[in-house]
Image 1 (cartoon, one colour):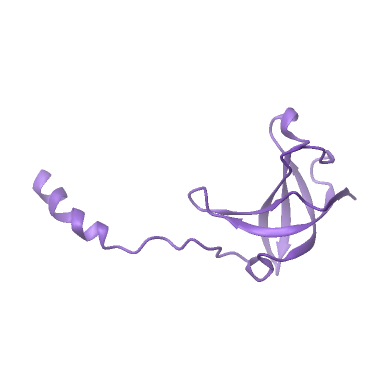
Image 2: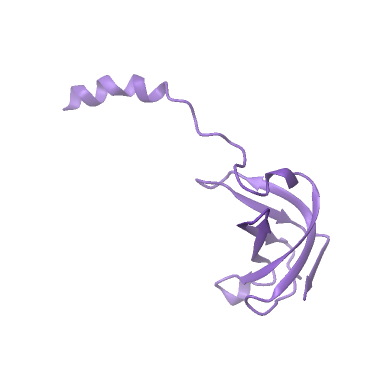
Amino acid sequence: MRWLVIALLPCLAALPAAPAFATGACDPYLRKTVRATGAYLPSEEPYARPFVFGLSLDCNGTRERVTVERATGHLPVCAAGRNVEVTGRLIWNKALVEGHYEINDPKSVVCR
């Protein structure tokens, strides 16, 4: 069994790496300033809500989750599920296993 694993290691090393770019419905808006309106998804921990929240965004008929964050805080805390309008640059963060959409340091955030 050990020899089988050792024999397969070169084969695994030859496999191509996963792509490091977005593959979601919001891709046409990447690296652009967008005005996005969607459902507010609060952080699980109440102390984190002024710093980060989720946005359920409709991109061409597909629901995508976007993380909205500001390191200095001061984001409004909306009611869960309420519409929120965010203006900022949409990026793809590939730091996690699957990657995800983010808007960091948004220009404006308004609960609707």
